[in-house]
Length: 166
Image (cartoon, rainbow, N blue to C red):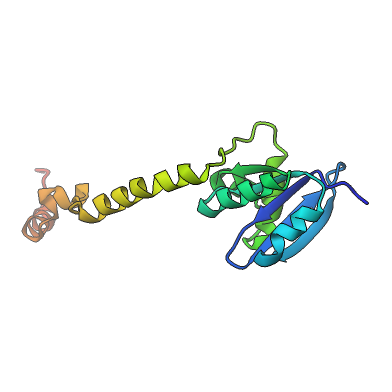
């Protein structure tokens, strides 16, 4: 059997797209796995490096994969985006994640524990409430007196006159 050295996993609500490569960087795994079958699928595989785009749920899956003996790597979505070759769908995203993982200088996100994630909830809630309660600030255009209608009308009238004396 071919040894898979790296798997890119694109997560979604009900199905996960997997893209794996062997030691020659040839794709050997292109598979869609349902959420309920994901743990049993990875339990059957030899320990390997699995990359996931960093999001709230990815920390859970990274912890689960680590318990199965795999090395889970979380990648910031902004860095993965550069490796999307064409279009945007789950298969292409999984391939891009797998490709991004191969770069030695790729930055990763540390996997958060359950306690760390729970600690983020009040912070995110407070920030969302602060954004909702803050008055909408005026844009620079709205704050200038020239945006008023009478001044614009005056400017248009004066601009039709010739300012240069002949």
